[in-house]
Length: 128
Image (cartoon, rainbow, N blue to C red; front, side, top):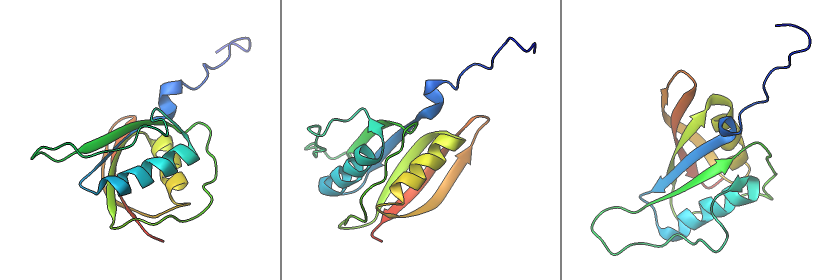
């Protein structure tokens, strides 16, 4: 590479993490998304409240989170029961998301599938 060329800036998509929360009460899903919104920029507005759909299938709530600018969450929050979140993105982005959630929850990795440039991680979020 010649000295006048610069490396391309990090792709914005490398900073995005997909988050899926399911199998929990809607109030716990809302708590998780409130923490994500407090810690990062997400595609879910504060008025986009998770709600159950009257159906026999499980409800899944999703968000895309931009972890490029992290903010500190003010402290632990309370869940009625542990929540499982499936997160997918680049290795560094998933790690930033996990660290951001750790301000509010006890976070444990309970499963992971690694790829070339991305990983899918199952996180268990619980009260601190």
